[in-house]
Every structure is written in structure tokens, then in C-alpha cells.
Amino acid sequence: MAKKLRKKYISSGPMPVPKWENVLVVGAGIAGLEAASQLLSLGYKVTLIDKASYAGGHVASWHKLFPDRTDASSVITGLLSSIAGATLLLSTEILSVHRLGEGFAVVLSGGETLYFKAILLATGFSLFPAEKKEEYGYGVYNQVITNSDLEQWFNEGNDPRINDRKISSVGFVHCVGSRDIKAGNPQCSKVCCITAVKQAIEIKQHFPDAEVWCFYMDLRLFGKKYEDFYISAQKDYGIHFIRGRVSEVSEAIDGEVIVKAEDTLNGRPVKIKLSLLVLMAGIISRNDIQPLAEDLSVMMDSDGFLLSRDNITGITRSQRPGIFYAGTCTGPKTIPESLAEARSAAIDIHNYLRGL
Amino acid sequence: MIPFGFSLSPSSVTDLDKVDTRRYRELLRLEPGAATCIGCGSCSATCTSSAWTGMSVRKVILGLQRGRDVEVDAMLRGCMLCGKCTMVCPRGINTRNLILAAMRISKEDGK
Image: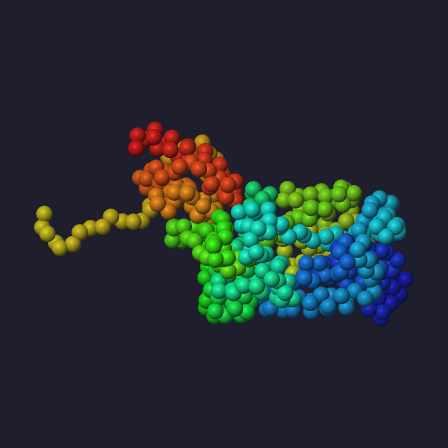
């Protein structure tokens, strides 16, 4: 018998897995798409749901990705083509979840009740609402936009806040809503430093005569080729870096904005007039995650993100059997990190289901 | 003394082995938030009097850590207690309490 099985295993490739086991992936951003694709290739039936009317999450509205300036749309297109066998339900959310035996009965907003053996939460993050930092004037001054607005302008090119004025100087404010205890987000959003460097270079390419200034508290350029990108911003594009957090923004009489900071390396306050100010809004936990977490009996960590079983060896595992995590639902992450985690979560789910 | 034609300059090195941090430790007792300063400079940038007096909460905290008490006292005299620094501090430090505490320590030292 064992010999026969072994022979079958060798002759027919991978070990056969039960085909009837369903996995629900919540969130069709990059982590959800990648995990769905991996689970499909492992032989599972995958249902992928997303609240939004489109797949791809935040990355879908981004233009180019650091550090190689890859097209964001090509990443999404690639991921979408790999989930052809999955059931993709858009504009769909979970109404309620009940544990049933070893699995879950899930009522979806479309009215259907489906049964799943495992649930993967790839619910992602929210962008910090920049208008909360009132002193920066987002939503008050037309000269102040966010990193997300700028990506949209790179994509579509029709933002009057940029098009309707002469752009002679541009500032980037790092850590907007990140590392900010008063804003309720003590965590570092991790990706804004390198995004600011990327966007500063892109702005310089659009407006070669403009002076570009980055105001930072610390530059955290930890990833592969990030430091090269930073060196290029300094050397090839002449972007200025001021070590000081912007304290306030006000409007000048000529329609520009006056930005105040301390040049902490020089120990003196500085002020500068800018035609455009870009706020690097950070990554925060989704404000609508709590009800779902309660429904699933998974816990929130002290930073507001979902609590993993272990932050070193079990980041993709919740404390409940059958519920797994991938991507930024457990904290700020880069795209490659989210994708790697999605693959890791797929293997975790595979091992879990095999052990049932 | 023989005129050598040059004079000696005092060293500008802060000797961390010898620096007297008593005032900083006292400040921490009165305002524990001082330990969480990340030196971002928001306080100094928004300070009403900084441009004229050199007042800077960030530099007061750092100055006390490095034993630069005389410079700290000079800065503290420039504060008008308007409270703008409290509003912008990302770490939520009670800078008003911090400044008052630093002033009290300074006064008790008879400086």
C-alpha cells in the first residue's frame, strides 16, 4: 500500500490534496491576490472578497513603485491573471461569521451563506486622514496635497491644485500621522520615506526648474536599493533634505504657502515659501476592522492592527485556529513584504488543512 | 608669563564620562515626558520667541543631558509660556510643565 502510494506520488507530481476544501480570502489587495493565487496552485477552492468595487487595493491607484519605478498597474495585472480559477466577489463584505465544526459559516452581503475551512484576512490598511493634522492645512489650502493625491495626478494629470499654478518649489512632509502619539499612531509607517524620495524625483522630472525640499525626522531607508535611490535624489536631482519636522503651514499673500520647521542640524528655525506641499500620509489600521475582528474572535494588538500569534515566528497566524493573516492588516509593510507574507500564509493554511 | 603669541582654546568636547546630569535627572522626575523627545524641532520651529531669543525646548532637553546649564538658563529666559510647542509636539510632551520644571530646577540652583 505504502509502496503504491509512493509510486503514485512520484508518478503524478505533488501530493494530492483534498479538492473540496474552501478557503475565504478577505481583501483583494496585493496580499489577498497573491495568497489566492498560491492557494489555487496548491489545489484549494478560493473565494476572494473585497469591499471595494475593484481589485488591487491601494496599489491599484498608485502610479509607479519604488525602488525600480515599476508600473503599479503591471503588478496588479499580473496578480489578477494568476487568480483566474478563484471566485472573485467585489463590493462584498462579511455580514456575520459562525464557527461550524472545524470551519466557518460566513454570511456575505450578497445574501449567500458559504462554508469555509479556513479564512485569510488580507484586509490591508487605511491611509491616515491628513486633514486631522490641522496645522498642515490639508483641505484648507489648495497648495497642500497628499502622497496619494500626487500618485493620482501622476496617473491622470488632472488635479487643478497642481495644474492651475506655476510650480517653482515643492516640499514633502514626512511622518504625517506616523510616529505621532497625539494623532494616535505611534508606529512608523515604514514606506513613506522611500515614497517621498521617489515622488520627489518624479516631481523634479515633471518640473526640472523647481526646487524640491524634503522635511524629515529620520530617514529610514532600510530596503533593497533604497539608499541608492536616496543618493540619486541628492546627487542626480539636487533634492534638498532638511532634518526637522514641519510645525505649521500658512498661506502667503501671493498664493504660495509658508512652511515653518527647525533645521535641527543647524539648530535654527527655517521658513520657506513653496508652491506645492505634499503630505506623506502614513499607514494606519483600518477603522472598520474592529467589528470583523470581534465577529471572528481575533484580537487587536496595542497598535490597533490585528494581533498575531507571535510577531517573529507566527506573524501570519492569528490566535484562533483556521484564521490567518497576510499583508498590512498586522502593520505597515512594503509590497514585497506583503507578497512574501501572502505566500507564507498560503503554506501555513495548507499545513493547517492537511493536519485537520 | 612669556608671551608665546598664541593662546589656548578650551576643548569643545562634551566628556560624557564627566558631564553632570543632575539637573536632567531632576527634570525627568518632574516631567518624565522629557525622555521621549526625538529632537524633531517642531517646538523650536513654532516657538514665538525662538527667532529672537534662541529659546528651544528641544535644545533645553539636550542641553541638560549634556550638562550645558548656562546655555539652558539663557534659553529659558526667552520663553513666554505661550504653549504653542505643546500643540505641535508629536510625542505629546507636556512642554509647559517641562519648561516650568526646568526653570524651577534652575532657580533652586541659584542661577
